[in-house]
Image (tube, rainbow, N blue to C red; front, side, top):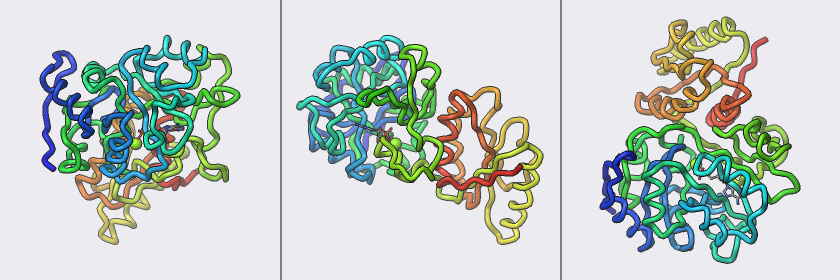
Length: 350
Ligand code: AMP
Ligand code: MG
């Protein structure tokens, strides 16, 4: 299959490209498109054959449900059994934006789209090209991140091309995304609202609107002996090709420890890398050092993380050490992704 790649600009919507992309979706094809979080791989959410194609193109296990993207509030009612009061409040506060809600699905949504579940994940993105594309596609676009399963989510179209060229019909290239981490997922089908995946919309922000909000215990731990409630979160994710390890503790001790490890690996002729910050980048003796930005700006770290992981692959780095990035806000989302990318390999220094 030849994949058509078209440049688009959020501030100057290319009607022709968007119409063409919408027609591909209506005919049962696949289009990758930019959103404010990461690039999505879109298909018709109401067409079981389209969802099967998405799983195939990504190499994704078919028990890992897709998020249905809508462009109008009115579109939600058709997808769900009922719209709870919490959903109304959350939509008023955060839609369009990086928040996904899990609700009881209606019969309109095929099980192929929900990975066999009776619930459906719904989001209204804020990216203008994404919204125009969803409308042109008929209003219901199922879209996971536009990467091959297990790989870091693409934050620029170049990495969509790397993973999916020849496997999908079209890529809308909208340049760099704004946020760089996937949406916050909140489940509204349980006794109390519960966060299944942290993101740019934090627990504190959700609690301001809803009162108490729970958190899935598996967000930052893998030893809880419990399966995550978002099926996708059980899979190894976001991983670079090299071996990634996290080191946490006092700044100087972390740098000393990592440098000793780097020397060992280099003596074995391994190409080494470090994920540092602006303040520490010059302290490391790695072949490739990358700064995730300033610790004071957690959002900028979120924006850079996946790109950095992909760049290590581009440069064939084999061994990667990362500083730890825990934090209360977006830092929690960053750490959640980094832990998964590292397969939870963490060295804690006292
Ligand atoms: P991605 O599209 O790559 O951002 O992945 C979608 C995420 O949403 C995965 O972690 C899924 O497991 C999760 N998800 C989608 N639908 C549901 C659902 N109905 N219940 C729980 N988690 C879901
Ligand atoms: Mg994904």
